Length: 455
Image 1: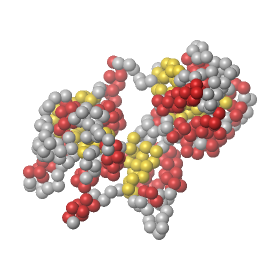
Image 2: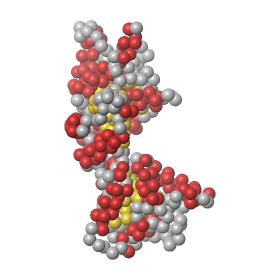
Image 3: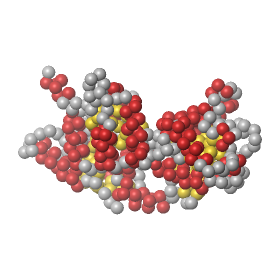
Image 4: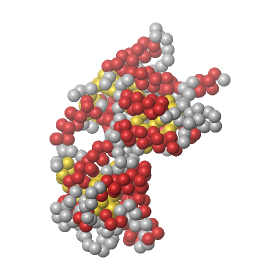
């Protein structure tokens, strides 16, 4: 399915440079002077395995409709109307300007999927400037350097997220021609002797990893491949994680560091518990670590074959998980036996489901409807007699689902109210167990800069 993307923004932010980069040749004039592009220009673009029509537009300027710049702006607004998605470009070095704020409102009113592109992001101070772009209310800024061909992979991911249906056919076709579906990276972590290696050996159907009753046999994070119902996985066996005070030998310290790196590299982490002493303090610390790293999480209670199966036993464990892991309410929990293979199909399905939730994007319209209802049903408390105003919310990214709330006095919003919003997000949009990031940003006054200039 073909689609059209318009590149818009104020003058001299690098729109034509990105246009040339996407079409693969110098079709648009590029110069440091603003206003070089006057008409909208179309080209056939390629980004990774995506092919689409891209429109380069004149820089947006505030001006009378009958003037030259006013007619150029009308051309840009026509391009926005034609486009399936918009790349709204800013200059990261300058940071969001009052003009950027004014035209971000035009783009938001258009109601088209929009990717905020923070161009000229090379250099030491780029990250701080890029984060300021959240003020525009257009989601997570994608850092690129069109001139130096940096950040194009992130731009590809953002475009796929913005137009999932239009890009799906092209991507599936490319995947079929190359390596097939993406292999989900899964790290198996837990205390020593929880049965991690035994579990992986049972999953792959061979004694690939050394096992035994002695704790601490695994030292390196070993990767093995697995296919389950046509879905490929990379499984990482890791060294057992003990309390830091008990980690003394240099070799064990290296093994623990290797396990932590496996968690950071993974997309889904299975925290393996021993059925006889599940949810000990160290188990909770390991789960907290996974949550802090922002990875999808599945709790697996191992050695289930040794337990007498009383009615409601699984339900009690799930209740215990919600009580002990309050920041991951609804975390998936599966009872398994690495020795007999019991529950392994349920475990693999839980991993696939957790991966899907971790990647989920909430439609903007549904997100804002929920936000209005949540704030109306339970308004934020007044602080020092002053009312807190929450303006709007946007999803900054997935992996894990991350949201930005624009408000007044962000530092005054109580933690309890943030937890209320996170729990409501979980319940309404079915985001069980996955880490959720909620950031607060103060909405900038777009006229502040003008007032200063007048003085």
